[in-house]
Length: 428
Image (cartoon, rainbow, N blue to C red):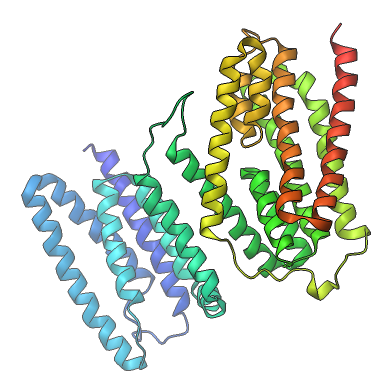
């Protein structure tokens, strides 16, 4: 290792120690000198110690370097454990946080020299944030209910345990169904539902629903629709307010499609932007009106009372349904030849607008013209909007279905009018 690189890595090891030491020192800033195990200086030196040990291990190389690192780390951990034990006895407390933080400081200091510098820095920042958030995290755990904990554990297991082992090879004809993609859809559905639950709990009814709509719309407006429809059917909230959340998610979806097209093929924006903007304006206008101008169908304090972040089997079942829809869309597209681009896009759009937008944006100007690609993408957006009416009618029913239909038809009409005017002006 060259001298400059070694100094840079040792400087990072020092910075890691200073980062941990700053948080630990601030937390114990009122203690008398000599009344704490480790502060900013001790942690800074620990980070450098880890870096130096890592450098020595690199020089020794192989088994010798590994043994030397392990022995020094064990001795350091034992010494820190004794000091932390004495501190706990003096303060009559029971905590291993400082000891664990010290071991992590040493280990990350060594890794900064031996491994990836970016990973070491990122882990140090993340760990320090967790240490600094002690009070908020403890308060959150105290208020946590069993359904919330269960749903969080299920979502984490779906993402970090099940997803890596789910097969990534398509199964079936016409490109088949990719099990991993279906599982990702299930994770998105569960995640959107969980985010909506948390947003309402911590930000209140109106702000929570709208924030959840924005966050969910970035991933899947269909997932927001399914989640809010189920809650409306269970009478967990005001259908009017839940529909406003779907409207915000739909507006984000319209804007998201435009952003994808701009990133891949900006030439399409001349035809696509006017209908997408018109639809987004109508959706936002509906959401604002339904939330702040129209009188709610429930008293303010009873607008939302979510009982469960999400139901596992419901999100998995709907994810499988969307996977089947995607396969059917591909089948239709292949069988209808050139015209299949529009028809296939319309069918796939029932479940996934982004994949249609990405694929069609890359097919222009050949083999698809700008006009045909625009119509195909808008067909996917339109069917995705129409499916929200179906979800509202089948799952949400009643007032929620009527509100969703009003919003969706308004977006479709505004988009169609804007497309007609744009084609009349720009296409001879």
